[in-house]
Image (cartoon, rainbow, N blue to C red; front, side, top):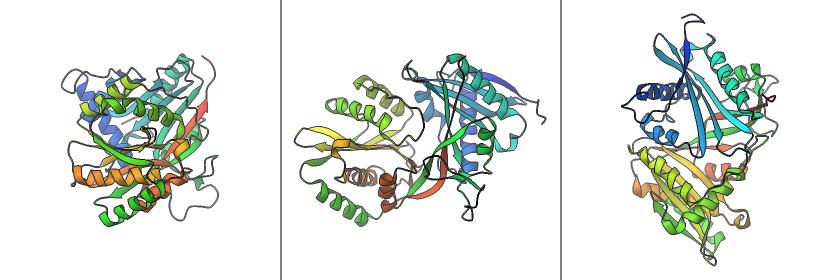
Length: 368
């Protein structure tokens, strides 16, 4: 293959995998999985096209444009630009992924140029993206071998292909998130002990509420408020993120898209008994094929209720719930900002171990 033996076209998100565009959508997901597997050295994080399609088709809150690079008729790379439907949000989010065997042929550059052109035409002044990076070697640490974000937490190998590519495009590493996995089953005695200690600290003002699938109607308003807070509550380093307002309708639609892909949400929340409101929650996304990895979704404790071990309480409760609902589940996967020491400490206590890192990159762009 030569540097010019490829073409780029835009993929319209298909209505189904069996109809027009479905095959290309599946090929795009294959590229994504292959790139992550090459970076992390495992296929544990692989996703399925039928799971993603309903989420990609939900464009009311987050918009997407997808471009594919083909060589010899085969999809060998993808580029995607995402942005909030909120016109006041100044950022676009991008991803460029090229099959390892097709790199250094100009494909990634051509896709990135395409995405950046679309971004510039939008008038949004900030371009940001997430990129998977391999674990830094244990010997790394001498100057030049790793890149450290301004937060001072975490690093990525300076020689990482994704890092070199983004540096060459004038982007800066802003934050590093740790990818971790928890091998299942977890020792039930250990889980029970952690939960008991958390309950002791929380006291009688809090109780755990569990549900599987969509959120009960009488809890949707609380969950919408938690998601709204979640959008800016996580450590963000120098990334530009505006609050994403959630309401009950959005809860219904987002959960419906996830369920449409065959996944089931397991939710553990902490209710503040005196007020009857939910003040903390965590969610696990379980695939229809229970032998595949479960994804750890959001975890949040509202500011006024922190310091009472509610994070550990809801996480242990949900892992116990997972053991009941999907005892054959092999692993739980999660990502956390390296500066989020409190959540990392909870995860480490439960047995999560790192498998790789995700870099958050950013650059400001001139007006169109």
